[in-house]
Amino acid sequence: MKIMVISDTHGNYLGPLACLEEGSDVELIVHLGDEISDGRMLQKLTHVPLILVPGNCDPDAREPRELCGVLGGQRIFMTHGDLYRVKSGLDLLIAKAVSEKAAVVLFGHTHMPLVQRENGLLLVNPGTLMTASKNRSYAILEVSAESVSAEIVAL
Image (cartoon, rainbow, N blue to C red):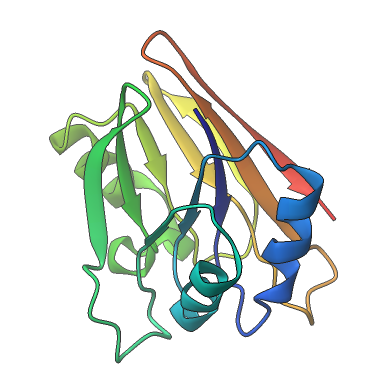
């Protein structure tokens, strides 16, 4: 399963839409918050299913602030990251992912892309697609029951 992971779009719903046109074999999009309304707009403009996880800039969101479930055969924990103070380190986030028995944790909030393995856990932060950012990026997650990998796509 090929998953596009985006976060911190901050009003730029056209950015992910343009990225989708390049990689049309994406089967799912995960939007990790901060302007979740961009994710809702994507739902209207594309046929690709979306998972929406609100961030700290989404006070009116009705969706849960974190999700954990099996996608493509792997258990994945999804959160924006602010609840785990990821700007100050990843220890709280890793502890939560381990308690959820996740193989992968997807998070945003820092606007800094990251793909890192730690103690068998794959940590992925797609960065930001905010228009004002000079370093826009998203992540592509390849998931199967046997393996999982991620790469950052810089724009």
